[in-house]
Length: 419
Image (cartoon, rainbow, N blue to C red):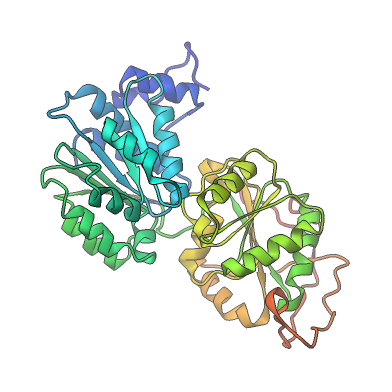
């Protein structure tokens, strides 16, 4: 924590004193690599593309210099000055919360418009006037259609998690929004990965951009310890509670492949006595907000989620990410496990792998550049046969699974961390 006797490490950027006071109160000890590189470029008015591993502080990398700009430069005309687009409601809400924390000692007005909640209160805020708007594309287009805001005074546009936008099919909506923005603006595009489609979009959006990349694209944080648990599909629902007991589950994020499997798994884990929350696209926004808030506050020990939570979910202290189903791609794996070991912390990433998922797992390992250790839970019976009728979570595999001879006793002893 920065004190009066300790120089604020963010002071060298020339940020407004009110912002420096806020980051000191928030306990920011030093800028992350993406912040070191991006903040000076944004403050200089450059267009920027930024690529970095998840959990490296991208919001502050663009948020702090944007707030400084609004504080240091007089507004040329009344109206919205900054637009930030985000792919999911949760990420949009987190960006809004972070910006409000940074701006706590200023009078800058920040709002968030997302789907799944009543549009009336959002309309009221927009018509009263705000400086910064964080939005998801669909709800923003709703407001534009109702003429609740205009972009005549816009100075800065940020497209966050651009690769996820592409995955979720938002590209046509993004193009519709961009077509209404003023040509003269500062534009930033941040993304954990920059696939060819995003590079093409960046070239059409940005003018002579500066490129910032920290670390290898789509690489996991160095503080993560990985492990693979080979297990037949029908035994996954039994193995997972055994793992959770073994690690003493306190703040664990579990990913499933589908919304239906997330609900089934959450009900199953609840019967074991664990406090469970669930989040996916079919849940109402109030349900999603309550689940996330309960998980953050420690009311739930385990959050079961689909890939909706793989991007942008920023919860301090997640000790483990467990893939109940193997992710569909190496990038998905990196984004899922990026929910732990954030901001230089340590964390564990476990993946339950059925025989029919081994090929997907090998693709992930090829991307990571090494084979992940195979481990097992002591005293767990891997020989239980599959039931004849196989439905839901108990979809069986008749293939044999090779159970490792080295058993997972303690994540500290058997899975030593690389320092």
